[in-house]
Image (cartoon, rainbow, N blue to C red; front, side):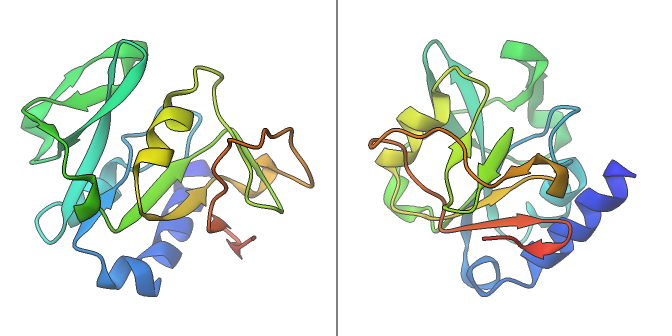
Length: 160
């Protein structure tokens, strides 16, 4: 069920004007309770530059995904790309951002480690939060420094 929902959601994203136009995209390699992105990343990495986060201490580094053979298991059992860090943040046009939950104002609830809280202010990307419909909330706690998503999508379409 969740795999089908993930596929439906990412099919929506593939038709989004920002996705179509973007050449460099920040995505993520999903954990079991997140929107499944493995097939999506594999599908698009030869046509667009797909960047994935790598946990380095208290921050996320970004690295270019070049295929399944570039992955190794890293922090929190997340498969992460090897290779050199990608630091040209101005080149990144779109962020596809995971969340435990999102609200109707575009606020994001993560896993509590603050990794995306530190990364997102460094970027100048258009950010689309993705989650399953059952993960959306009317309102979640937020702080003034939290970076809101520009849009939030679920398998049912654009939610915010």
